[in-house]
Image (cartoon, rainbow, N blue to C red; front, side, top):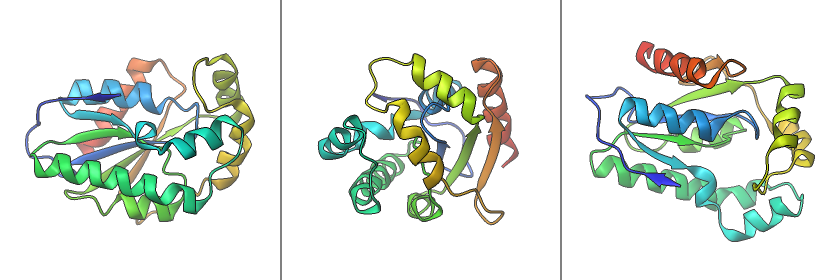
Length: 178
């Protein structure tokens, strides 16, 4: 799901990655954030090769080797958008530091906005979600893979348990403070 937007005024970080494990609300929050900021949106899940989607749908966790071409595609998309003069918001799990370091190589800089949600709420959200290849059984794998943000990363963490509009507002505020 790609969505075109207009460029906003000279952003410090051309790209904002809304990140977190499955069920944290990445796509919903990133879509609304892009709309509010007038930026181009991409759900990085749409850039997964079919082989990755098939593995996840079958309940098989992805390996670093599986994720490498996907992360390359996300960086390439960001670079293409930056070359066209567009700022972006994209939803991406960005579970490991090495993945975030790779994404941060995108032209124009990347701000990571982590959506913090307790595990029991993540589980509840995934159990009620339909039509998505990521199933609740994969949550444990994502949580065990996740590496906490480090102080030297260009990142902020926001509480994503509030109403959607409050979470989006917190993301806008966090981006503005950077």
